Image 1 (cartoon, rainbow, N blue to C red):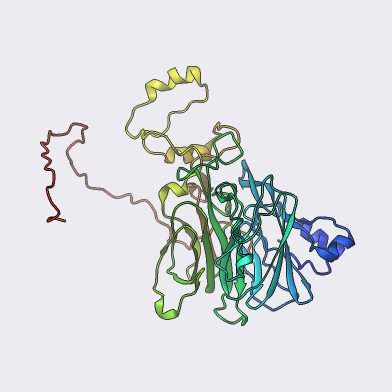
Image 2: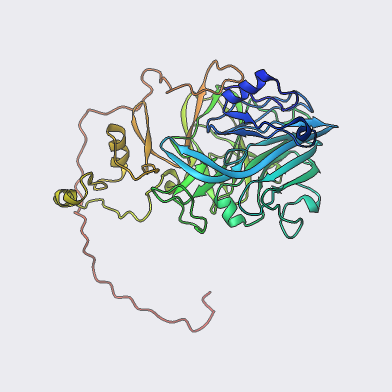
Amino acid sequence: MDTPKSTKNITRRDFFKLAGAGIALTAVNKVALAALPEIVTAEKANTQAPLHPDNGRPYNPVVTLNGWSLPWRMRNGVKEFHLVAEPVIREMAPGMKAHLWGYNGQSPGPTIEVVEGDRVRIFVTNRLPEKTSVHWHGQRVPNGMDGVSGLTQPAIPPGKTYVYEFEAKRAGTFMYHPHADEMTQMAMGLMGSWVTHPKNPKFMQVDRDFIFLLNAYDIEPGSYTPKTNTMLDFNLWTFNSRVFPGIDPLVVNKNDKVRIRVGNLTMTNHPIHLHGHEFQVTGTDGGWVPPSARWPEVTTDIAVGQMRAIEFVADELGDWAFHCHKSHHTMNAMGHDVPNMIGVKQHDLVKKVGDLLPDYMAMGETGMAEMSEMASMMEMPLPENTLPMMTGTGQYGAIDMGGMFTTLKVREGLAKNDYQDTGPYQHPKGSVAYEYVGEVLTVTRPTATDEQSAVEVQVRKPSGHSGH
């Protein structure tokens, strides 16, 4: 996991290191370089090591979950970046790819990291089939740099490059996304994260700092392109356009102070829940939360268009679940319009249906966990380019999760910049839940039936407001 370098004075050795990390530099001539920073792209969907600054103001870098940070160049005291809006192919998990729109080869695009007070210049090249713009969500910028096409600027036509320039005035966690045909463009994955670090690197310093965006897609099994007119009925809920088991773990040292920054660009709220630890919300896209206004939580609800930064001390070893607490959001494709088959005897139908569909299997009679169990034991036939609703395995068998789910892996003895997956946690002897083999008392209860007693209901139309 090589650390990308700044694009200032890229050497041949640096080029091959970047390429090994799935990051490449587009070849441009020296005349073009005088005006534009290099175009840096990434294709791999794995988490890249933090981008430590080798010029400009110092800062403590973030780690983008299943992503990377965009290198820059310094030119006359200005930090210059080059974003390219373009169609991309994003692997959402092994076995499924989506045709999305993103920046610099990925969706979401690379994280942009600057320091409070930096003068920033961003070149935005539009390789989409339609016009676009970039809004710097939550930041204080001159009105003409706010990125609302038609209102504050002309839209960027296909094939053109526009320049945004402003001072990063306020430290915090932000996003960038279009305000041009945004229903289509954000539904296609056009978005990215932005972090403005404080001038003082010791201000609210943490040991490990992660960031990612929540986004959602409606991609029918067998297809590759999201349905952009979907309002609520999405079938893929993602962390940085990845679903479990394709989401990397958050790997930390025991007793590390950890910050996780999460932004929500879906169409609904998400209660993000951490197992094994309590945290505090220490930041929003409006700024840092004063210590006197914080309280301990294990779940924080992140509304549409919000950023939240949570912090905690990782003082409990183990593999701890970290996920959205809406149960349908921890489920992958094919989860909609499936009837509840609990208690429905299907064995007499298997042969009849099997004559028409040879690979048919009766599922759901005792619950949908059968699906993940079957997937872990055998190759299940699925439509092209899709995923089972629940997938992934752990050291004790199938993990009945998908979608917005990953793990916080707390370990001892990690190197400072080691974010590699450590494998399953080795539990101390006697610390794993186990089966009780003694006698269990039986309880007799009335048999449940579908019959209901007739109830007479009388409805009286209200005649006034006195009872309100």
